[in-house]
Each structure stands twice: as C-alpha cells, then as structure tokens.
Length: 380
Image 1 (cartoon, rainbow, N blue to C red):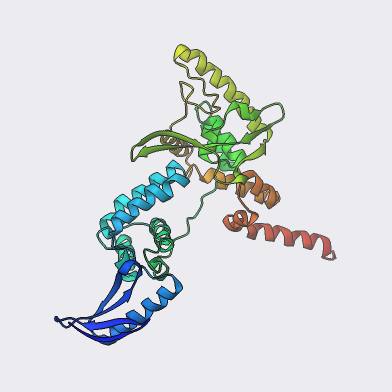
Image 2 (tube, rainbow, N blue to C red):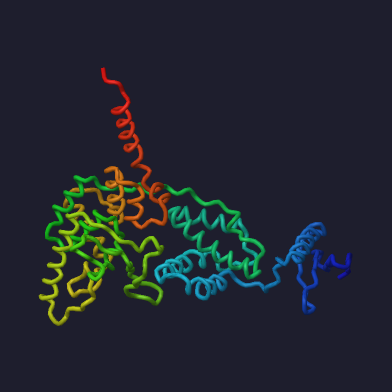
C-alpha cells in the first residue's frame, strides 16, 4: 500500500492493494480510527467529518458491538433500576419479540435510518398497531440516546425516521342512563360496589384494586388514593406489584357522592361476610375490593366479569378504563369545573384533561351560547 497523502492534524489517506481507499486518524495510546470507501473523495469526506468530531469530542472510538448485546445491557443495567417492574416487563417483551429478532444482528455503529424505517414498515404489514410501533420506537430511541451519551455512536438514527399515524382511540363513555342500567344489572354481583365507585370517581382499575380501608373515611365521605397495583406474569416475575401512582398528582383525596358512600358501606358488609365464611383461610390485607380470601382481585378476572355484565345489560363492549372517561364526561357535561375534574382524575395538568375530553366542549359551548341568549336577547 502507498501513502498518498498525510498532513499534520489532517489524518492520512491511502489506497490498498485491492483498490479500496482508507483514511485514518491518530487517537490516544497510539491507536487509530479508520474510514473506508471506494473512492478517494468518499474517504476524504469521511475523514473531514471524523476530524471535526474529534475536535468537538464526539468522535466515536468504541469497538464495534452488536445491537442485541447493547440493548440487553441498556435494559438490564441502565433502564431497569429506574422504572417499575411492569414497565421493565413491557420493554423486555418488545426487545424479545420485535427489536432483537429483526435488528439484533446489526452492528450498533452501523445501524442506518433506512433499516429502522423498513423495520417499522414490516411491523405495520404484520398487523402491529401504530401505537405499538411507537412504543417500540420509544424503547429504541431511549437506548440509542444512551449510546450517544456513551460516545458509542455519534447520532441517534431514530431521529431520522417517520412513524405511522395512529388512529386516535375513540373512547366510549357511558351515558347516565347506561350507568344506571349497568349498576342495576350488577346488583348483587361482587363487582357491583366497585363499579359504583369507578363511575363516581374515575379511578383507574389498579387504584381501585389497591384501595385499603385505612384510606377510607366513610363518615366524612372521602378517601385517599395512595397506591396502585399491577399483575406481572412474564420474564422471571409472577405476582402482584404495588406502587405509588406514577405522578405526584396521582396521590389525591377524593370526595364521594352519596351513592358511592352507600356502595362502600355495602362493600364493608360484603367483606365481613366473606371473612366470616372463609374462616382461618382468610388473609387480612385490608383491601376494599378483594377476592374470596381477602387478597387482590385478579385484574383479568375483573375484565372478564365486567364484559359479561355489559353484555347482560345490552351495553357496548367498552373497556373498564372507559368508566374513567365516563366519569369525566358526565362531570364536564354537568358543568363541573375542569380543574375539579383534573384533580379528581389525578391528571398532571389541566391541559391533559382538556385534551382528552375536548369532545365534551361542543355541547358546553352550545349551553354557554344559550345562556348568552337568555341574558342579552331582547324579548318581544
């Protein structure tokens, strides 16, 4: 090989016997970084970029590694210690089922935007929902952001790809009449009182399942939301995991309407009956909504029984979470201030509340215009 050009502070360029061109930069400890290309002009451009990155302190000098190994290290050593077990399990599933099988054998430093874009397109063709693809993108983006901070790569290729457009989920809140019908059909069912509290407060399922009697003050008609519970059944973990709500605003005090207080009184009697019937097998967990032995209700069972009640009431097959939307929609349509609804639901800001429930605004505007008419319109 013959050195064609070498200048102080400019690296060197030479052509190999096989015809390919090589540029190199001197690093610390007598090491060098190499750039390869088919033409002198190509490696000159790569060298120019490399020298600039070296001057800025962003030149990648780490050894090559496969994306699979890096993603594993990032998830286990960087991400896992700072997140909930449920979040870790979800991310682990996305790595195992999607990212690693498709991209794991590509070198981290060689990953191109086109490869990521094609990966998303393939997942869309396989039938994955845009929302899931966006979650996969979030995981990959976070991981490669860490690679940039560690100077393993000079850029995050995820910034250069386009994501599929999500079809916004059409929430299906029940009307007041439908809520009454649901509670009528649920009378005597073990979910009856939970459904009443859910409709009255807009609490999440995990918050309801984690509610304890120590947090309830029936005499004052209020309780505190202090925790939520998830059931994990994947990746070496199986069982219930209890946490505080995700945000500070999620820890909140809720004032209860009379029908919800009555439901809690009835629930307390129901729990006492379960306890007496269970005898020595009872496990005292202080849970308001518990199973037949005093422990957590299984979320999947709650989901299935809720669906059966909806069917029996001839109501739309909504999600349990739509009861949260039901509570918010009913309150806003009753002209309850949006700030009150925000605090009741535990949203981090009023913007979140209004973005979610903007569908209620047209009817509120119609009512407001009617009030203007009643005040200012001259009567004949």
